[in-house]
Length: 253
Image (cartoon, rainbow, N blue to C red):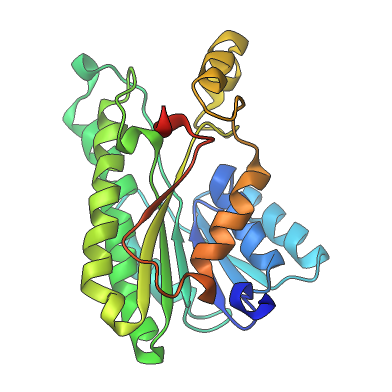
C-alpha cells in the first residue's frame, strides 16, 4: 500500500511555489520523496522555500520566472529539466485574482488573468508532456476553484479563467491519458493564502464562508496533503479528467 502513494524517484515542477497553496504543495511533494523545482517570480521567497526544504533533507531547486506571459512557459520547460531531470509531475498553481467588478474589468486585466490562470497551465503542460510520454507516466495537477462553478462578487475574470481550468483539465486528459499521463484538478475551498487575504481579514466574512461548508470550518493547509499526494502518485493511475473539490462540502450545499 505504501508504494501506491510513494513519490520516491519522481521529479515535480510546481508553479506559484513562492507562496500560498503553490508553496505548500511544493513542500508536500518534496516531503513525500519527490525532487521539486519551484517556479515563481519572487527570488527571495523561492530561496527561503528551498532552504527550508533542504533542511528537511528534501531535494529542491527553483526557477525565477514571471509566468504572466505564456511565452515564458517555453523557458520554464527548458530550465525545469536541469536540476533533477525531466519532471514527472506538474502542478499548475500560479494564479491571480484581480478582484474587480465586471464594470471595471479592462482588456489588460482580462488578458493577464486568463494568461496566468488558464493559458500558462496549458502551454507549460504541452512543453513537458513529450518527456512524460516517452517514459509512459506523468501527472498534471491543475488548480481549479470554487469559482470554477460558482459566481462570487468581483470575480468575473478570475471565475471565467477558473471555469476554463475545469474544461482544460478534461481536454488535456482526453489528449494525453492514453500516453500514461493523467490530468486532474484540485479545487480548494477557502484556505488562508495571499489570494484569500480579504476573506480572512474579515472575521464575519470568514465565518460566513465556514458556515456554507458541510464540515463547518474553512480549510487548513494540511487538508490538501492527502488529495495532492493521491493525484500525484500511482494511487490515481485510473483517475483522469476529474476535479477533486477540497472544500469541506461547500459545493455540496
